[in-house]
Structure formats: structure tokens, C-alpha cells
Length: 342
Image 1 (cartoon, rainbow, N blue to C red):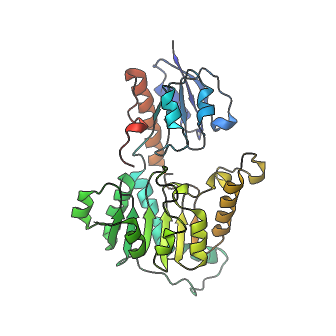
Image 2: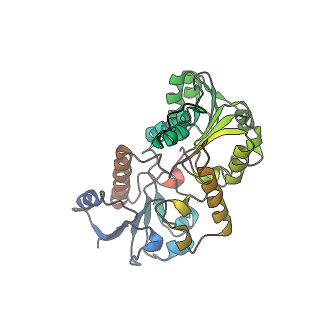
Image 3: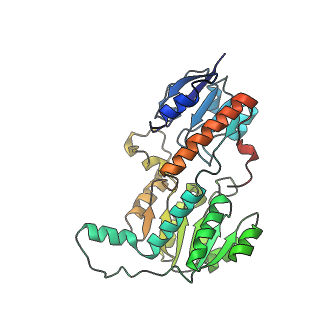
């Protein structure tokens, strides 16, 4: 009997590749949809389900599919999936751990440079036909101290790119990388020392219980007055209210957030008032970020750091290989509970 497979949250360009890949395999494709799980009808006998980050798979959703055997998320992060529940039901979960290392690292450095050179107000001013340079004087990156929180796959790529700017690099991670110390002069320090000593702080950690609000209203006060903060990891790693206060108080000279708390309210053309599942706290964080959006020294982007042609193809290819390995060997290539890095 053919395994029943569904892909959700597709953009459309992937469909021919998916169909061709499974043409000769023992699989019945029951759904190829652009919608997330919460907006899609699926048969209960689905056995393999591939999703992106906006399909929430908690206990209730997982139990809707009693024959489910594999959840293949097309992302590195998997905080949208209740992995413990899935495992208790015998459902394997796999991800795409290394598709966007260079992609996200490049985007991170682009955000850093955009903040230091005030590109947001520059572009806005020129788009209105104003070519005055008043108030647009920027800051060199060369010679600055950059703090990299998390030196896994993405964080280590950021270090390598930044080394060309002749900066001093501090790092914080539960596991130190001797190669970064040897090759790029990275110095590992405590989180507190990193925050208090860095001109720029960039965050590259997964979202877990331990990293929830890793940057928060207490430790953000340690940051140097006039420093910059960049987050391209996961929104809840950085507390929205803490950023809001730090910008207002002048602790932070600039902030760039590609991921932020409450992003699901705004991203993917979702209309705020049409949502029925918004909690008061989520709405509050979303509105705080909406306020930040209008400040000249704050850049918000729509979870876009991963979004290149090359990275998207790597995501699809790795997901297909995950599923193929599961069909042939009973185990995906990248089961999430064995993931060691980021």
C-alpha cells in the first residue's frame, strides 16, 4: 500500500519537482497546498506531512492524524511542532538543518551595515525626492567589537564574514568552537560580558525554553549606550518590550529584527482583525513592534533572511531526501532530536 503524503505551505514552484521526485516511489500525494494546516482540509489517514513554520502542530493537531508517521518541516527551527508529543505517538520529526548557513549570515551582515550606515532613513528620504545628507552620518564597522551570541553553523559563518571587516569578535555559546578562536581570534565570554563590551550584538541561537527572552529587560540594560542589536534567529529569543524600552531610552542606537514576537500577526498577508486566535499578550507584542517599525533607527523585515533561490531549492531537496530516506530505511536523514548544532 502506498504511503499517503501531504505538502502544505508551498509557494507553487515546488510542485513539479515534488511530483517528479515521487513519480516512481510508493507514495500517494493527497495534497499539495499553499495553505497552512489550520486553513487546510486533510484526510485523517495522512502518514507523511511536510510543513513550513506557520503550520502549528501541537498535541491536538498531531492526534487528528492517527496514522501519521513522519512530520518533515521545511525549516531549521521546529518550535512550531510539539516534538515530545510526536515522539510519544511514534511520529518521527525531521528538519533542514543547514540550508541557510551562508544565506542568513550574509543577510545578518547586510542588516548590521544598514544600521550603521543609516540606510533606512536614507532610502526613505531619497524616495521622497530629498537628497540632503543632514542626519545621515553613519559609523564604520571596522574597529568595532561585535558580539555573536551562538556560534553554530550560522553564527560561525557570520564570524567568518565579519573577519574581513577587521573587527574584534566576542562570542557566547554553551559549546565553544576552537577553530573560531584559532582562525579568527574569537574570544568566548559570558553573556553579560558580551552585552556590556560589544558595539554590535547579533543573535544566532535556536528557540528553546532556555533561550526564551535570552535578551530581556534586565540584561539589555548592560548593553553599551549607542550599541546595535540584530536578531535573525527566532522572535521570542528577544523580548519585545525590552527592545522597545532600550530604543526609547537611547541604550540602543539601532535595532534590526528579521524575526520578532508577534510576527505571525503581520506576516503572510494576514489581516489583524480577521484573526480569532490572537491572545492579548501576542497582540500587545505585535503592536509594540508595529510602533518600532516607524522609527528611523529600527529595521523590521518579514522573516526573510533565508529567502534566496539557492536556499529555497536546498530546503526542498533536503526535505525530499528526508522523506525518501524515511521510506527506504524507516529513518529520515535529519531527525530533530539528534540535531546537535544550529
